[in-house]
Image (cartoon, rainbow, N blue to C red; front, top):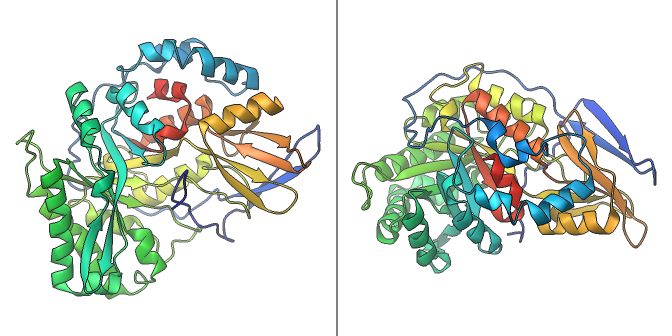
Length: 430
């Protein structure tokens, strides 16, 4: 598991037909970025209405401080970002920690290896409807199963959050158990479900965020129709079991299940991809789908983190043209609060960039900020101490604002990976 993020969509040779060439005029490095701009359009039918507990009327975006100051723009420069990070984050943004600007649910991931996320949650508690601390793994142990991660749980932190508001806490559980054993044996399935439900009851959680599809795809079990059906059935059974339990702190609410899904790896839906049929199949049993719309590029194909057209095409693939449907309301569109620093010379390479890293690079290199129109992302170039050229893609107020607008058009919630990696003034958009 990586220290800054633990998920990446595998780069695909099929990604992209249109090419975007960017060059830094000062040192003339060239970066070829391939984008996928089209996917198949498939229909998606509506199912039972999503139980949106937090569907507040959307606030006028212009009321946010960053909009009032005119900071949400394309032609931003590095000095404006540095200035905002030292003044806004510690002053005006702190005054707006309670008002919400986004209508639909907001799920935030928090990781144990980045303690800033825990602080951001306490500071901006009212901005979120769902919190998912990355705490648990369900693993095979001999012929049985074991749920690991309770040692990560911070009950004092949860208590503080609930005293301050009514945000839902749904720890993430990665299902690492051998799928052939888990899915084909009824006792194993029942044991897994019992472990997860009991952990929620004993720890006072509001449900879980389950991640398993990418693991099952890696084991190639989703290529087999019978195994795929067993996989879907397991998720349904888990959802039913969670929904059968009322919350101790609110007997009118039941435990929730949010399921993690990824985008297709190519413009044609592959056998192992999570598609519109799977979405409809799980619509009644799952309360939300955390759609990981980031890591479009990697060290071997440097470029934007999440091109806006890719996001639109994926939502269209899953939902058809049925915006603001019951299923659309169940989608948590993934937005990255981290960036990437790609090496363009001296061999392929790159790594995740947090807000702190980003500000350090801006201060050191004083780069020219560039707007890549096709992906709707900001980037800059720099040369390191060994004269290797780099390209840095990191979220900006404009890029995040445009993704929030895209999600809002579809009637989707958003999920953030992860909140300890962003700049504080990002939260003023939520």
